[in-house]
Amino acid sequence: MEFLNALVAITNYVIIPATAYGAQLALGALGVTLVYSILRFSNFAHGDTMAFGTGVVILITWGFQAMGISFGPLPTALLALPFGIVVTSALMLGTDKVVYQYYRKVKAAPVVMVMVSVGVMFIMNALTRFLIGVDQINFADGARFVINARQWREMTGMSEPLTLRSTQVITVVTAILVVWALFWFLGRTRTGKSMRAFSDNEDLALLSGIDPNRVVAVTWIITGALATIAGTLYGLDKSFKAFTYFQLLLPIFASAIVGGIGNPVGAIAGGFVISFSEVGLTYAWKKVVTYLIPNWEPDGLVQLLSTDYKYAVSFTILILVLIFKPTGLFKGKIV
Amino acid sequence: MSYLSAANMTGGYGKADILHDCTLTVEKGEIAVIVGPNGAGKSTAMKAVFGMLNLREGRVTLDGSDITALSPQDRVKKGMGFVPQVNNVFPTMSVEENLEMGAFIRNDDFKVTMEQVFTLFPILKDKRRQNAGELSGGQRQQVAVGRALMTQPKLLMLDEPTAGVSPIVMDELFDRIIEVARTGISILMVEQNARQALEIADKGYVLVQGENKYTDTGKALLADPDVRRTFLGG
Ligand SMILES: Nc1ncnc2c1ncn2[C@@H]1O[C@H](COP(=O)(O)OP(=O)(O)O)[C@@H](O)[C@H]1O
Ligand SMILES: [Mg+2]
Image (tube, rainbow over all chains, first blue to last red):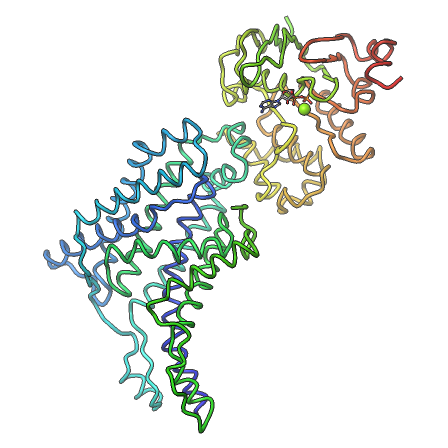
């Protein structure tokens, strides 16, 4: 019984939140990895792209709510999501036209491109603040729980609570659908294959008559979509705040690099490695320890790191990977 | 006029010229081979013919029409195929996908062409689902040649197709190249294995420091004492 309680506690406080967070990181890391492998630079503006996309989704959500449109038990934001994607992808294409295209034409070095993306990041950052402000916004509506604490108690009779929030389920289901669609697109369609070819060997892709402008455009559209979806899911699950999204850049890059940057499967695996490490190391294990080791009451919280330091986890993992296995878990491109 | 004529090519990558008044021609259905020491500009000449180099002087015509100003992609559309010396496959894509990408500019059904490539290189059919990067050197070269054949080119350009493969595989590849030429495709090929290459060549070019040093039939070059002494090792 004690063991079961421990298991429930771990599921409730570590496995469920880390899975949802991992799915959000994975989607973010997929966007970063896609830009890296096709456009060949680390896009520092990705976090703020997520913030912008989410901001647009929130504005449209408010619009829908004002018009009395709702999505039943599901968050209205899911209805707004496609519109947010269109706006964000359009912004990506516009940014490419105005900014990145020039640097591609002069064949700027990747490190220059990174600096350019930092500039874009600041602009996007400001744009998002103009659009929706700097405050914390909760925009999740619809049913809050799939399983709440009372239902869990009635269902199992256990004293240890377990809750499953709808946003967590929505996050995981959406992430699975998006990843499936992305892999289908890259693996089965002519355009998707041409993007992989371009990523594999740009010169040969050009010799084969693959249109680089089209590859670049489709890449930005997908990046905009991935960023908006990842950002909206994160915001639904936690809350929206522009600055938090900028901070997410670190765990997202850590995910992409741990998995092997440029490798989509790696981005997904990396997302979960980072989320489980972060949640696991900042969780107070006292309760679980008490269940598992009878007659011992630990003095502290048995928390390895305060949650204030959660970004240190990504940072440490990132450094370790770069030192010991720079190509990541799944062989990515050499960074 | 020759099917391909690249006349008086002069140019390089930056300020210094690599090619000096270099001329290459290939007749319909003929095999032309370029040999010469390392760094002679053989690969550079191939790139120049394919439009991957800004020529300062010279003129390239294919089947009578001037293509000097065309981009590589447009030359592919005109019926030229090119297998570069290095990085000539998509390593993380399957053999079949490599061939598909070769046919990217085609809007018609290319299944028949793919079958023809599989008939020419049966091993590729067995490995169609395997990534090109995981294949042996010889198999990878077959993928590279197969990819270029997917556009049904009338002129196939090969830069050292037998580099780094065993002698047996080399003979095998030469046989396949002869087979391709028999179907009426003109071939312009750079080769390190000068002796074997000149044996199957209708026409041979010896390139030294970006200039045409000797030009003759393959047989004549093999028989030329000067060429033998300097380039064929006796
Ligand atoms: N991409 C390049 N940029 C600048 N110089 C190059 C490049 N490729 C080759 N060269 C130079 O051009 C000359 C001819 O090279 P190359 O055509 O590759 O010779 P080959 O194929 O006959 O061995 C060499 O001096 C080489 O250093
Ligand atoms: Mg060469």
